[in-house]
Each structure stands twice: as structure tokens, then as C-alpha cells.
Length: 254
Length: 362
Image (cartoon, rainbow over all chains, first blue to last red):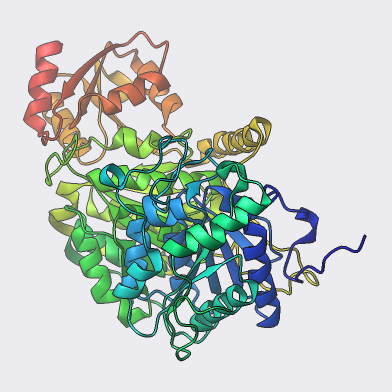
């Protein structure tokens, strides 16, 4: 068997990684790793991860990395960047960490146009803690804390992260939503989010639609159907704000 | 390091202003803060001074963020600090916990206000328990309780060095009176007093090419196995216990022939000093003991003070409902001295309060 080619910036002693089979995190981290290689920034990157499934990436890269409490990755990255602007800070978090417990940090870092890059993986649930309802859980979707399906009357509608961040950031920010189902586009969006920080433009944010077959209790076909059809119907994929020109319009096919 | 203060000079400052000058003199590079009374003027003075000396400041969205940005800046190798009070101190227990777990040498100035809850914005000594043992950990912190502005200046300089030498989060525990009151003190450059400031160093963002010249730094504060965490906590505890004898500081007076020892900390110890003088003038053999470090606590030193004359009584005077008292009792467990108390939660204590209390119990 030929092992798949891995990015140079991956830390091989911790591979194979610890994510569940079928999880989308590996795809996102591959796209990030390839970008780190191609931009030749391995030695300047500080990778920071949250609590939740994103935590499993704490020793994923051959890059200096740190890890903090649930929801607090954004301020830790901001503190590092403010202290050492020459470093390239990448915060990695889930939808619960970013949109729920850490939402005040996300909002205010965006408003201040902090020169950090945040990648938020949206799999519509709290994976690590066993599949509870998240801010991104779709209406009607069953989770451990919405066993009869999410009822927007009592729990509201899914958080539209990139839309909300796009509304509060200046034009120098970069805001996009990608999906693990469109790898080339995902990789390009992450690249833009890194370049935007490297050029000192402003806040850079990519939400990535991802898979969680373990908690969704789906087989391979159902998993892809959910991320490609159900999720994309609700969460349009594309660049919402880019200093690099028009880029991909929302819903544009890759 | 650039010299901030030329000749040592007398100044007439508020405590919060003193904090800003001391941090500057100590070489602090960045402050993160969020408004809360009575520490606001620390930020006010820092934001006026910082740009003149190429130092930085960020007003964050809340105290969680102020604490975590401080953690980030420290990891990146900068001498960073924050200041807070009351409910802000409650929120900061979360990042302080991270600093304990990852041994991050942050410095935090706590200007205690009344509690519980929003309490008052004025004064108290009710953040002793929180500052010494807050968070979901074991209190692996270094806490200095200052009594006057000279000490605020001295212990901030010392605090940065202690934090970076031992890598336990370090606290300067003041209060609203010290924060707002104006009094004379002397500012100086640490080098002129023979104090060498320890250079900060990064834990991430290190020099050297990864994979060729070094391994990547992977920092974490969560573990998969009980045993992994146990090893870490026990190693921290062993180191903390080892360094504690070097760290403990206290002041005592007149214990040699004492009938009663008055124990207080922080600004209340000034009232205790005056009370002892007045009581002695009236023929009452009073003495005082003041822990300067509340963590680690000078427990053995207090036992020694008690033993000096076999004092019959010990009076704990504090602007809280027993927070110092509890700290003290666990440290001198087994002593048979009778412990009395003067609790005035959230209210100032003057010499007459102590004098009257002593007379009522002797």
C-alpha cells in the first residue's frame, strides 16, 4: 500500500491522527498543512486549538502550537499576535467554541479587525461531548439535547457565522465559508485567509462545513448527502468578503 | 533595557498610578485590561505612558479575554500583565487556571472591592480566598498582599521577577483604598537598587528551523489519562513546596513578650501597627504579625511568633468575614492559642476598632 502524501508541516510522530473515521477535520487540516507548506510559513506559524474535537489537533503540526480552554482560542491568538506581530497565528475551533461559548471573543476580535486567522469547523453538533445541539444544528435535526429535532421556536435558528462576521468587519477582512466536499476551494479559501493576515490586512475567518458520522449516526452515503445537500442548503458556500477581488460568489460551484 | 526613572525620586501618587509606573520600571511590555472599579486608573496611566516607551495596551471585550490575551502574550515571550477587581477577578480565574496549569508567568494586580456579587466599588479584603485558591486547581500561585504605595512599587518589580523565575502566576493583592488613595513613595530604577530584571523568553514562536534545528513546541493543558495529569500536578506541587521557603515574607513586631498577637494583612496591618503602639502605651502587651505572602503562607513563622512568649490569644482583624482567618487556621492547625476575630467585611478597619476589640477580649 502506498501511503498518501502528507504535507511537510504535518508532525508525523502523531500520525495517523486521532479523529473518527469519516470525520472532516483531517481534510481541513490537510488543506491547512498544504497551504503552510506552499506559503513556506512553517517556522512562523503559531497553531492554537480549542477544546472539543479540534483539540485532537494540538500536536498535529510540526509548528509551534498551543491549546486553551473551550471558547478561548481567539483571545489567546490575539494575545500572541499583539505580542509578536511577525508570527502567523492560526486559531482552530469548532462551532460550539466559536459561535456559542466564545462568541463574544469572535465578535470583538472581528470588530477590532485583529490580524489573526481563525478556522471554524462546523459539523452542526458538539462532537467531543457526545453530540449535543450546537448553534449550527439545523432546524429539525436530532441531537442528544434536541432528541425530537431542533425546534427554532424554542431554540432559535442556526448561527450564520460568516454572514454575521462579514457584517461587522471592514473591507480589509477576509470572510468565507468552505466545505470539506470541495477540497480545492477549501484550500484556496484557507490560503486567502492566511495571505490576508500575512499582508497585514485584517481579520481572516473561514467556516468549514464538515462531517460527523459518529454523532450523526450516518453511513458514508448519508454523511456526504448531509454535508453536500442539507448543510449547503442552509449555509451557502463561498467568499463573503475578500480583499483579493471578487473571488468565488456565494453558492458558486468549484 | 531603557531606563525609565533616572534618579530615584519622591512622588505623591495614587496606588493605581504607582502600579503603572512600577510595571513600566519593571519592563512590562504589554497590558491587557477591561474596565472595572477600583482598578481603572491602572489602565488610564498605562495608556498614557505606554506609547512613550514603546509599550502596548489592548482593552479587551471582558476579563476572560484580558486574562487569556495575557496568557497568549506570555507564551509568545513578552512580560505581560493585567489588573482587575471583584467580579472581574471571578472571570479571570479561568485564564489564571490556564496560567497555573501551563506555568505561565503572568502578573495580575487585584484591587479588591466589596462582595459578594457586584458588592461595592469601594474596598474590601474579600478576594483573599479567590486570589489564593481560586479556579479548579490547587492554588499554585504566588500572592503578595501590599500595605502601602512603596510596597506596591517594590512588589510589582519583585513580582515580575518571581513570576519569570519560578513560572507560577503572581498576584499583587491590593484594595480600593490603596488603589485610590494618594501618598508619598519613592520611584526608582531597579538597576540602581542592584535588582536585575529577569529577561522574558518565549515558549512558542521559538528560533530555529523546525525539523532541522529543533522539534516543534506543543503546549497543552489537557490530558487523556488520570495518571498524566497526576504526574503534572504532583511535579508542580513538589516544585511549589520546594520554593515556598524562599518566597514567604512576613513582618512581625513585639512578639517576644506578647500576651496577644494581632494578625492582619494588607492595608489593615497599618491599623494594627498603630493599635499595638497605643495598647503598649497603656501597658497592654500586644504584638503584631502580618503575612506579606498569602500564598505561600508564612505558617511556620506564625507558629514561631506564637511560641516566642506563649501568647494566650491571637486576634485576626480583616475586612472580610473570615477569609484570612481560614487561611491562617489551616496553616497553624494544632496550635492551642485562642483565636479571636474582628471581621468587618467590605468595611475599613482603624486602630480604635482593634484597640477596643483587644480590650474586650483580654
